[in-house]
Image 1 (cartoon, rainbow, N blue to C red):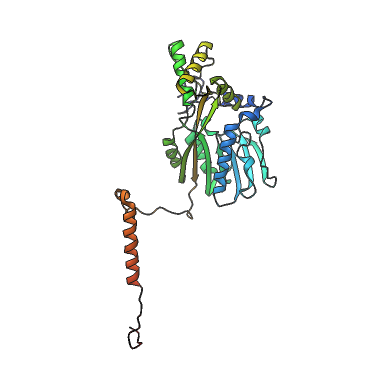
Image 2: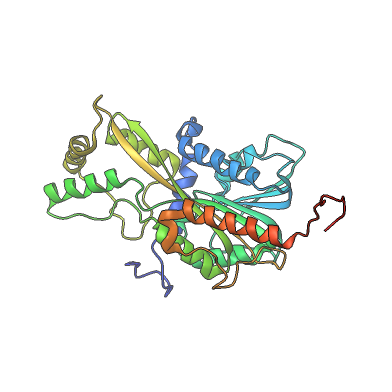
Length: 336
């Protein structure tokens, strides 16, 4: 919960959205800003694959929190006919890569992910890659996404999961406790995978698919990792963040990081947990689950599934044989 006296009475106000916008604006000032986007580019590529896995051409899509075009650049006319790219940072949006397929009708809009300005049922595809973990009201944003989708439209997203940067979080806490007698939150909170399905269901999505992946990256030390996070625009933006870390605390945390998690070659790993999610807006044409009690196999029989399937197959063959009439020639050539 927020500890800032200037915040509203919102039930969840963890992140300073204006500070996050400034942090992301600053990434555009780096001449080599693209080199920091390796995580977002990789996840964007994997998310684009999930779009192509759906055997459908979408008429109008929305890339929500597009960043530098990490997903959009991979889309072609075979996937989507028209695309709206939006981001909270106008400076980032200006430099965002549009689809390489120039036949896609593409436009850019500055949009806050917490307040979508689109008309109901405006899109049949909405994608979002590594942007929604900075949203304060994630249930509300999911509800807005649902409202913007057409019936049988799909939302495909990727967010950082709760195990992201657990090595850095633990090392900073231990280092700060050792040198200062206590610790503050230096890594922003991330969503837990067990909560995502409930949030999507609560917003009305059906036919959910949720899976996780881990990307581990090696760095020379903790300092290079923190520098890259800043270059990505992923530095802490929570209201209760500590403005500065003491020099001694930083060196202590770096030493702890290498001691607890270091690789044999002297580098340190950083884990990025990615939660991929797919949810559909309900439509009468979608397949419906069977009614309770119509199942033929009990879950308690899973340990002997091969035997159960074999017996069920034999029973079906016998039943079919009884139902099909047949004739046989007798010795006189007559039919029976």
